[in-house]
Amino acid sequence: MMTPREFARDYILRWEDGGSTDPNKTHSMRPNDPGNWSSGKVGVGVLVGSNHGVTPIALAAHRKTSIAAITGPVMHALTVDEAATIALDDYYYGPHLDKLTWSAPAAILMDAGWGMGPGQAIKLVQRMLDLKDDGQLGPVTAAKFNTLLAVGGPQFVAGALWTIRDSFYEQIIAAKPYLAENERGWDNRSLYFTPGQPEGWWARFNA
Image (cartoon, rainbow, N blue to C red):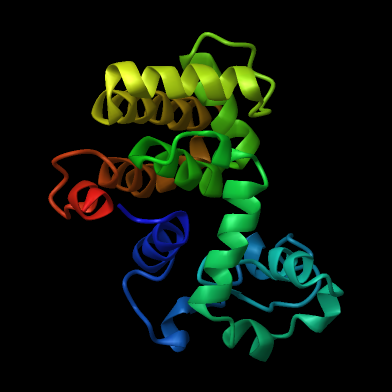
């Protein structure tokens, strides 16, 4: 089974880097992406770019430095290993996903949090478990998730997570139709983590 770090590298390489290891391809400088700007807003501040899915704001916070220290060359030099460490700190240990039994469903929740924010991902799970959706992964949420995993099995929980994740994206698009351009990418990413998907992530994760 992949470790949390191995999983972080896996989804970064597949979904943030498109399988590329060429920094000229992984370092995104698209000016219409707010995550590529030092302010987090299009056209405000400096166009620094993002790399391996890590924004300048996230990198500055991780390194405990000023945003001014994150220049284009600094972002360009970011390694996958450091990006994976940021993923672990911000999307696994930070939101306390380590309280969950490590499994494919826990990994799926980590990936979902990367895209929609850890708090929102936890809220979706809490609704699935019929709990108060406060976005905090405490002992009650962890215990109920772990029990469902033990009783229902990883494939059942993964299917439930896929359903609720897909519904969330549909609700977002209904509220903000301009985000429909992201629907195919969101759908492909959530399907990637399901058993039987042609790319075979499920088997690789559990090998």
